[in-house]
Length: 310
Image (cartoon, rainbow, N blue to C red):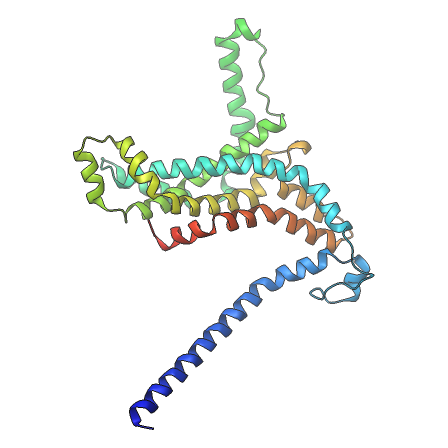
């Protein structure tokens, strides 16, 4: 064999070894990240006695298999799942749409004070939830009801009889308040994501539309919005996950049992002196299913948006 052919064979061998190493690393990563999920699934189908006798990740035996934990978790979380969807879907859509419009105004339209607004929006991302809990609760339960009650009873007193009261104790009103709060809190991060995406769009295309007489809204509707679908997938998935999995705002703003969201019911399901690990794991999987479904449906668009493809 010549020296040239020998080098070629050695190069192919090294390439195969590197590919095998890459596959080994990927396989390790898959096992590492899916191991907790497999453990939760195995525990979900075990009785309490079977869980105490076997390793958490081991499958249940014939006598230790049960579906009662899954049934208990589903019956407990089912109302909370519906409440979470009623709250999270409007909040996700509002924050993504308003973030897109805000980013469009901060990227393709030049006006005085633009940099200052961008700085304020970025600063809003770093405001922790704990810092706004007290003023948030005061706004929804004291300030806003007082303003609305005074306005309605003063201006429309002859219709309402002067005794209209803001329905702050109503469960659906509390879900609406929670949804608006999450939408407002999600606008800064959505704006930042859309702004970085819009900066990569060709300026020549927008300038050509302006020369043709298109208005700012027409440019957004006919050019920017169709190109924004991959980034909308990113922001919708991200924001839905954040809103759906939140517990802190829900504990502060939702105190009606009928309006509790999934995270509140999951926290109640896991509480108690005696821990039922199979029910806890079943509840975690049931509660996580909507977010998993969102990732599956919008996975392709999510990958395009992360990659920056228009």
